[in-house]
Each structure stands twice: as structure tokens, then as C-alpha cells.
Image 1: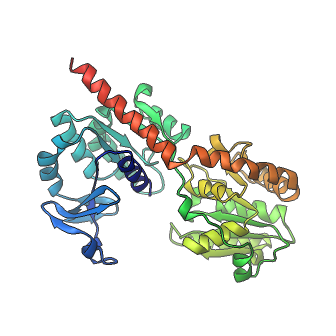
Image 2 (image 1 turned 120 degrees about the vertical axis):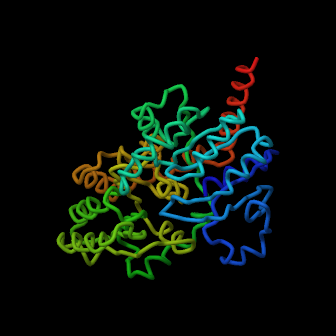
Image 3 (image 1 turned 120 degrees about the horizontal axis):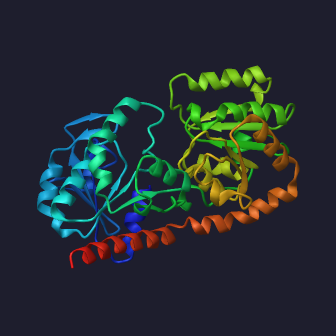
Length: 380
């Protein structure tokens, strides 16, 4: 969504934009081949002024893909571009593009998208990637784009020079969370009284997201009434069962609802009915789901390990340490203090304005212009 939003925003501002990515079997999905056309490099698709090139994939391991035609594309086409923006890590596409950029003298930027700090899984392979392919990619980048102060600090701790790191927040896609349906649809579906508080957690079910301490804090704060909705796909096998067991052990299991992932209308209905959104993550480079909740006008509780916390604090929500005691206290404050909820709800539009893709696209455009100016100055 980030790449699409920035690409379309830049195209609207008059720039020629090409997105180069791997074809992971799109030719057979939702009539893709009817919308796209074959080209020398694979598939080509034009959408709202943005050209997308899908390179054939010859092998794949998780996000790591083998796309031999990138060499031919870069050798033949790179001279037509002024600047290159590499999104994400732990693949071959970014390092290959970086190599050809260095060879042709084209400035490029790297946006790790929260991946710079190896976490969750494949830690050994990620460290190997950093020590080999990633070293030159970062060393010669004109800029490295962080989405928060937390991610910036990760980059600095990893040895990236401070002068090279720039912050540009993730934007919020309003179409994913608005317009909201009438209040009550989600509660009716899941048997939740409109008179009782409803706390919403919306994220992948993995240990670092903090759903476990949220369940304990909810049971402590709401021992007899209220509902906690845990929504999101299971990101680690068996973790949902573990959370369900924790909920049962607290005595509040009947009021903790596991919905699985929510999309489109179901997600908007959940946001419309939520009184509080909570993400007490132990580490989060930004927090896109938090931004969506704020766009829906829901006061939030986030940990100080969430990158978006600098925008949230005392404006659209409360910022806490990622522990049960502070979380329970914040839940209690928001549940029983209607004035505080109204104050934070009123602060949501200001945060959303800072996260508009129009504003962030303009900021990204200035970073590109700065890289080109630096290149021109260096060649004089």
C-alpha cells in the first residue's frame, strides 16, 4: 500500500514512475493478464499513470526471490531514470538495483520498511544478508528512509551515518478505514452489548505485538463486563491457542473474542464500534493499524516501543511502557473518563492530517530533489 500510494502521488505531481517488482504468480489472479501486457521483462501494467513491471520469478524462499531479468532491465533502462527508491530488505532485487545504480551513477534511496533490525524469524539469514549484500546497498545509498524516530535509532545503532538518515512517516489509507458504517453492526454480529466498553486489538498474532499483556490488563480492569476483541491473522503457529488459554485462565475468556483477520467492511465495522484501540507492542517500527484507528476517530493506547507514539502522545491517545500495570491503568482511565476520551478523539484529525499521502509525497519529492542536487554539485 505504501509503494502504491507514493507512486500514484508522484505520478499525479507530474513525475514518470516505474515500479519494478517480482511476479509471484499474478498472471492467474483476478484477470491480471487481461489488464496487463507482455513485455521484454515480463508483464507490464499501467495504472493511474504508474508503470509496473513484474519480473518472472525463477525461485523463491519466503520474500527472497530469484529474478534474473533484473540485470537486463537495469542495463537497458536505468539511464532513463533520475533516482531509484529501494523498498524493503532481505531480497536480491534491492542489492541488484543498487549495484547497477552505482555503476551508472544514478542516486538511490533505501527504505527498510521496519526490516533493518532482525526480529521474529530467520535471524541468522538476515544477519548474513546484512554482512554481504546489504553492506554495499546501505553504504552507497544517497538516503536511508526511516518511518519513525525508533527506526531511525535502529539505523544509527547499525552504523548508518546520521546525515544519511531521513524520516518520512507511513501514511494512512483512508479508504481502508473510512467511511465508517453505523455503530452497532459489529457488536450485533459478535453479541457485544452497545452499553459495554469494547477494546480492539488489530494486528498479527505474534509475541512481540503484546496481545498477551493486553488480555491480562483487560481482565484486571474489566473483571465483570466489557469485551476485548483480538483481531488479526495468526503469525506464529499455535500462538492463537496460547492466547485463548491465557484468556481462559484470567477468568475473562468468555469476553475475549478472537475474530481472525478482518478486512474491508468487517474492519471498518469493528473500528466504528470500538471505544478504545490498544497495541502494547514490544517493538513496532511505526504502527499502521494504529494510524487507521486514529483515522476512524478511535482513541488509542500504544507502547513507547511503537514508532507512531511520537504523534499519538496526549493528542490521539496514551503512550505507556509495554507492561500490564501501565496498560491496565490507561484502560481504566479511558473507559471511565469520558472527558479524556472526547479530548483524544478531538485530536485524531490533526494526526491524520500529518499522515496524509499528499503531504508525505511532497516530502519524499524533496528528498529526491536533494539527492539530485547533491549529485550535480559533486560532479562540478
